[in-house]
Length: 186
Image (cartoon, rainbow, N blue to C red; front, side, top):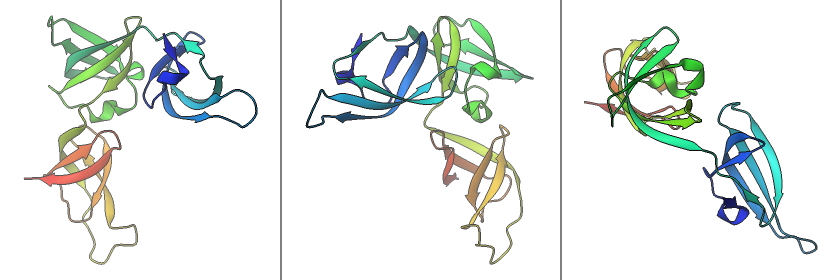
């Protein structure tokens, strides 16, 4: 059980039979009446963000979530194959069940897969990943109207904004939480 006193960003709760996590929350104690908590919740399966207000002290069930370390092996079309690092069992999941960051998955990367009733609902990548730039437009001298960045395609197919001086063939470090460029790797 989780109560409103346990709320924090990232906390998980089950609401109307669906798993959610807290994006942001605010405890409010008005001068008159009881305290309450305003929250923004994001659904793991629906990906929608909802605003909800709860009375202080309200209790919720925690979702039946299982977190497993798995190694990404390969993708075939819309299916992604992983190997459980504990028992070496292989699982194939459709891309639609894995969340938003599947285009950053690189073969042999160990990730955490969040399962809800034995069905994947999210993939948690390492915070930083090193990926090779495979396609980059040439930079034009004096082209800083766009803030000094340009889009490049990395080896996994994802498009990332990077500084103008980066070229194809270079390896870059990416923050997977924000999908942003961190630094060039030598």
